[in-house]
Image (tube, rainbow, N blue to C red):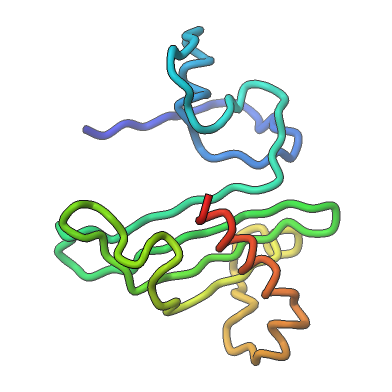
Length: 151
């Protein structure tokens, strides 16, 4: 089953972080109050967030070996940034991650300053030395990604 949510009109999010859709938003738009707790908040309200976490885990049914990944988009007064890590992880037969959510070797990383590079054209980690990474402040978004994945 495929589902697609399309919206028309101008973006009126006021600079808030949000995913393309959420169950909370769909329920809110339909006027349905859920009878069980759900993750997330409706994008129709005024609530703002300071970060967004998205993850994808390679599973055993994938024909082509691909990499699992997690990305953290964070917003502060000074920065809006995206830090993505690709992992050598696959879900086991029970659909669990061997070694837990923060297990697995980091194979590749990306870091984008979304205020100066909103289309993510320049990976600031490409070819960067450890010193350049520290100068960019990369250890902090990497720590935030790890912390967000653990919750």
